[in-house]
Image (cartoon, rainbow, N blue to C red; front, side, top):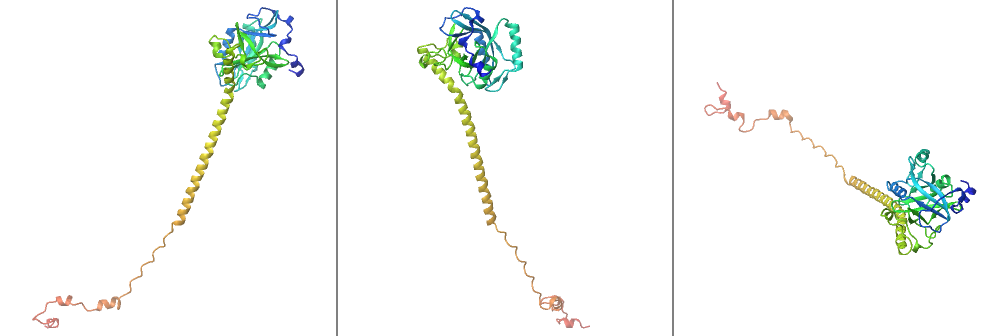
Length: 327
């Protein structure tokens, strides 16, 4: 959508003659543009939103823009899931297959109705339109009566957006069945009460329990607390993830430094031990014994010692060895 064209889009300047006449099925408010969502359709959207909080899910809203004596209003009579949409964490993209499925359902099940807006979830992100959300709204939902519904299934809050001066702006209140609802974070927003003390918040726990969102007076204070709590969940979760990652990184570096110090100390001990250990010199060989005087020859020719062989020869007649040899 071009800048000039978008500047003209405003739900307060809808050409009433182009709309079918009807009766607004709720207490008549003094609003330039009113939105009422069928209660069963709203329940179906909440059920879809609660199926997963890992990624965004969404779909389109079907119904009719109509008029009465007070001006234009929008009836949301159906919701069609965006099957085969591309869900990437904090982003949803309607693919060609998604639009083909939506158009097929519109032709078969909702003849005479129109696509009057879209819905998607912000699990723990709060109620707002991101840059991608704005691109989708400006590209595919350009009619002044087309709206965007955002649901946070974690914080249990939701909000509705409508066209104002070429921009998608939060609509302070809308109706589900015959009950009034207040968009989250709409103090001073379009048609809103303008003060935090009197604003209300759509709390999905209350919606499921059949109790409406907080209105004025004392009930608005509790709604404001729920809204503030829900708006803080996203930043708190992101902070916890960041802190956990930082802690893991610090522990890794501490362990790495400790391991390095241990390795260096071990290496120093090994080097010191190597210096201290001395290899002992091999012992010198023992000297050979000195030879006896006369050598082996002299030993052999030596006379036998006393009491040797000759003493053992018997003597005859009491004579010595020499007499024994006589004939």
